[in-house]
Image 1 (cartoon, one colour):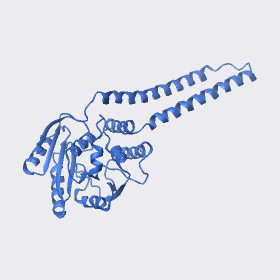
Image 2 (cartoon, rainbow, N blue to C red):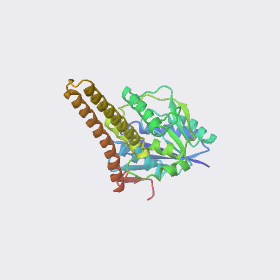
Image 3 (cartoon, rainbow, N blue to C red):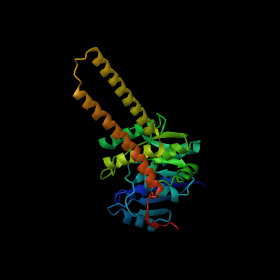
Image 4 (cartoon, rainbow, N blue to C red):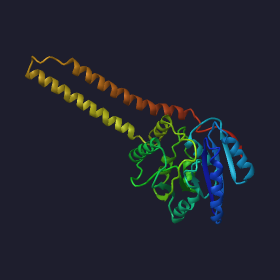
Length: 310
């Protein structure tokens, strides 16, 4: 009998998490041909989420709990759940009820057809305008920098086969980016349409700062294209500067009375100086992350495990 492992990062979900678990239980009764377990990863939530996770673990043998020592982010929580899971299929979903656990059979069905990974696709998203904008930027970034197929929709609700999980958890650097790890492991990926519900309560935990940090993780950990873009920009700026220098010389030779332009000189200096600082900052970002990774900075630190043998 095949087994499904559910991985759910938990943050500010003390009221919604029991509903998600109940929905998984109800659906898995219909899918009795599969065994299943659930991994709840408390990402140091400031509310009563940890107590809810403890209570669920005490009343359900197949629910496992992990609690972080501090907030490490959604992708670190996913990595912790993936490392502890042992299912033939692993399904990752949200804790707020927006991702419909009762449609997991659609994702599993695509895996049974032979796909290695399946992402849920929403025809009508119920996220805020800010989150939708962030999703569009993330879509553009993954397509340009990570070579994601244009027609592939990426979401936080997805299912993968065991061998994909095994490859993903080999990644031990400090800045995990789950989308990049899936795309690195396989290109045999498809979408399946599911409903997207309105949030039951609260707001998204993704602030602008967290979204920017996540995007930096993506393109600095899995692509050198930003450095190549920086090289192209540097060459372009150098070319513009050279042509402008020729133009100034020719203009001076044709008409010696033309005064040298101080404003133009200052504008060029500020422009090229700014470009140099931006490109140096990008290189510094790569070097800083290499330094942190070489110091073996952990992806996460676990304070407590529930229903999990050491």
